[in-house]
Image (tube, rainbow, N blue to C red; front, side, top):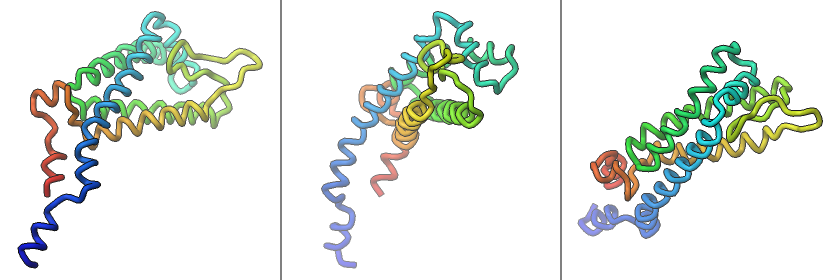
Length: 181
């Protein structure tokens, strides 16, 4: 390999440079979007924890008493994730917890659909059994949650975003170091 070839090989292509310039801002949008989702979901449930418990119970996966405890705790977990993502603290960890929760939610909705339950997912409100004549919207709910999972996945791979506590502390630089190779 000649010196010219080595220099050319180490110079990023224009598309790569654009990606490296855009990626932090795409990450910021993903982080703030996912934060908004968690804040909206938790905020819509925190005022009526009993309804949140009934929504979890409607999935018929857990015993009623456990479903009530999960339903009462879930809004606070969602609000905490939303706040952590909003400020950009421990973004990779928050994205990982978000991804795990979203996989659980996707599995729960798919399970309800497969078992023929007629429930509202309770994702952004009280949820529970649907009234007679109402049809569940499982397909839309699954697509929406898969979209949120994509946001969490992006942040798992590229958690460093400008204007965040992580950036101020110099955290999560591993992906930037590996991109330079």
